[in-house]
Every structure is written in C-alpha cells, then in structure tokens.
Amino acid sequence: MGPEQKVSGMKAFLAQRWFLIALAGVLLAGFLGSGSSLTAPLEALANSAMIRYGIVAIVLFLMALPLEARSVWQTIRTPWPPLLGVAMNSVAVPLLTWSVVILLGTRWLSRDMGLGMLATAAIPCTLASAAVWTRRAGGNDAVSIVVTVITNASCFLVTPFWVLTLTGKSAEIDAVQMMRHLAFFVVLPMVVAQALRLAREFGRWATRHTVALGTAAQLGILCIMYFGSVQTARRFQAAGGGWVLSELLIVIACVLGIHLAILTIGLLGARRLGMDRPDQIAVGIAGSQKTLAVGLQVCMELGFNIVPVVAYHVMQLLVDTLIADRLRHGTPPMRGERRK
Image (tube, rainbow, N blue to C red; front, side, top):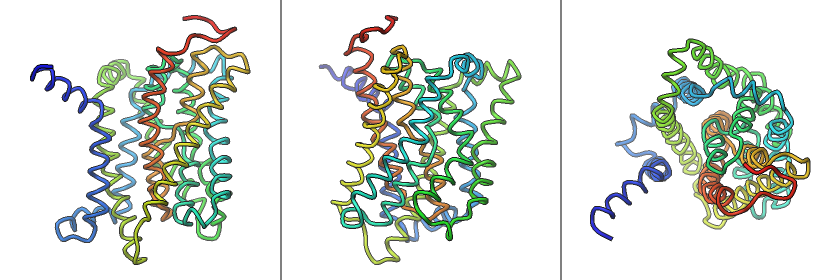
C-alpha cells in the first residue's frame, strides 16, 4: 500500500470514527482535568443549568431539522412495525434493565451505577443513528423515524414515569419539573424544527445540509458530555474514591447485553408477526437504541452516574455498525419475506 493510499485510508477512518475519538478525549478531559485551574472557566459553565438546557435544546433542534414529516405520515398508515419498535424501546428495555440491576444487586453493581443504568433505560430512541443504521442495514428507515418521533415526543411523560417506578426515588425527584423540562427542552425544539420545515425552501435547505446539521449536533453533544463528566468526577472526588475497573467492565457488558437482547427480540418478534424484512430491521435497531443527548441531561439533572448512558451509546454505535453490515450483506431473506 502506497503513502497516498495510507493517507486516504486514514482520512476515511477519521471521517467515520471522529465522534468516538472525540468522545473519548472529552471524557478523559472532564474526568482527569476536573478541579484544575486550566479548566475552571469551563467547569463554571458546567454548573449553569440554563447553559446545559440551552445546548440540549439546540442539539435536539438540529437533529430534528432534517426529519421529513412526509415519511412519518406514510408509515403511520401501517402502524404495527413502529408501534412494536416503540414498545421495545419504551417498555422492554426498562423492564429488562430493571431485571439485570436487581439480579446483580449491590455486590456487583454500586447504587450509583445502577441508577445510571435505570435512567438510561428510561430515555427515548436516538434521533440520528437509528434511521442511519437502519438504512445502512437495508431496513425501512421511515419506521425508525416514526419510532424516534413517538418516543421523543412522549418522553416528557414516559421518562419520569420509568425513573420514578424503577429507582424508587419519588421523594427526591420532582416529576412535574422533569416533565416540564423535557417538554420544553426536548419536545418543543422538535416541534419548532418541523414547523420551520413547512416553509419549502427551508425544508429543502435542511435536507441538503443533513450531514452538516448532524455534525453540529454532535459537537453540541460533546459539550454536554464534558459537563456531565465534570459533574461525575466531582461526585467521586467528594466521595473520596473512583471507579473500580471490574465494575466498569460489568456496566459495559450489561448495557451491551441489554442492547443486543432487545435488538434480537425485536428482529425475531417482528418476524413472528409476519412483518417484512425491512420492517424487522427497523424494529430491531430503533427499538434497542437510546439517545445520548436526553440521557445525559436526565442523569445530570437527577445526579445519576453518566457512565452507563455513555457506555450504552458507544456500544450501540460500535456493534450496530457491524450488525448493519451483516444484515445488509450477510443473511438472505427468510422464508415468507419479500425480496427487495
């Protein structure tokens, strides 16, 4: 391989993996640099709730802007695949996660990590990668978009319900305030973005600049990630301890197992119900993915550990890339399914 090919290959690798690399850098900067005089101005920003909320609103607005409402309405005409995906994401994931946390107990999982896992299970489907990975796998990305819209639009009700139900922290959680925050900083930006798309020229512009808008949203997520890592590092410093590597590995194994289990159940469940293969893929992927932006905000607002939501997001990005390629190129249509 010549020098030019090596440079080209490196550029392609960085173009595909830059977010994961930046994610690792931001986490390290937040965890290791917390308390340093060099990062003091940034940590001051991390303490401002309005700045955090504002960034979340901007990120969700940018992520919702390229979504086409037309594909949503077309998919609603045959609602069973998206409804199954919503059920997997909003019901199956929380129940499975709760079972895993209970099974492990405090011997294998600290209360802080357990709360973070339960909060991760309560958040909606990711706005960007679910449709992208579904399309990459040869699935029906319109179904993923509908699952995304429904879970995010209803998260101001669903997320507080599951957090209260699963964590048992009813005395410490203001459910009404959480609902208000999620409605204002998550649902409203999506509504505004879709309202702006009603102007045809603006809608065409947003569609043409999908990649740029997605990149800007990811930069916003990195900011939220830094704030969350700073807060988490401070809690551990105040407690006089840090993470145990074994517990971190357990959390990674748990969130990966939960994600893969729900993805598999979604694929097989949709197949058993006689859905077409593209719909099966959409149900599996959208039903098992979770959004980082909302997860970080929920964990920071409630004082939960952000490690599980970060681990879940990183694992879904890594493994779903491999799974999507396998689904697209590796396995033929099953019996009774339509060929594309």
